[in-house]
Image 1 (spheres, rainbow, N blue to C red):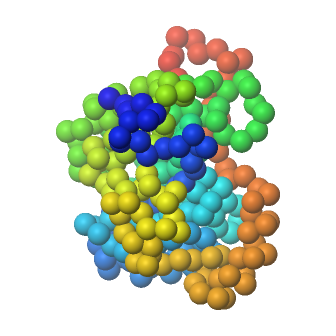
Image 2: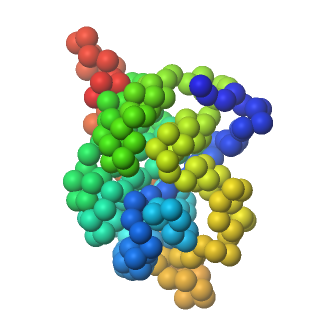
Image 3: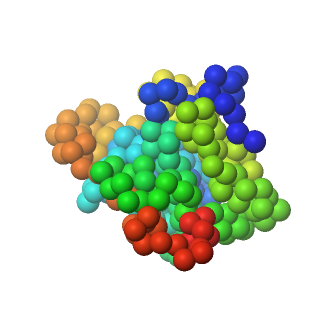
Length: 254
């Protein structure tokens, strides 16, 4: 069940929040190599303290370029999975109108989902505005040891939301709860203030272009302008198109 705009459970917003996170299923001993990797690729964002065997990094800007070589939060997730050799999920919400989930088991990518590939930047009107990758819900559930929720997760990811009344943040929050993952991620737009129900801002490690403190401010002042001119790679590189025709295959089956 989704929540409509204006409900007491609202987490989105009419201005269309965008945010992204890399979530690593690993103990606190993986925090140091995780942070080391983020610094080495000149990541900009926040690193949350370890909690319940989850490590979380939040990108800034969440749906944009957050690291060197035009890496978005999804590309950073792939690097983290390979570097730490652990289960990793990259989560990205774009303007609260698109949810993307990509998962890896170590270096192997096991699934890629987008609720609406047509919401990527650009003027390509030929892309179908329908979910892609719903079947990977079963792989996502297995990855975190929650096989029993796989069907519920698939139903949630396949659900067509009313863009005028329901935000993708609600879909993500429900998915995180099903998977036993930190659901405070949906309030990431609160940063740099404290995150409701999540860690306090003072508990987070703030990185700007891979550095903290004043050196980060100096480096990021120049890099930020360059990154904001570029778009992060799309979640689905080759999405289904209207001009292709589906031949009886539904987009959600991809």
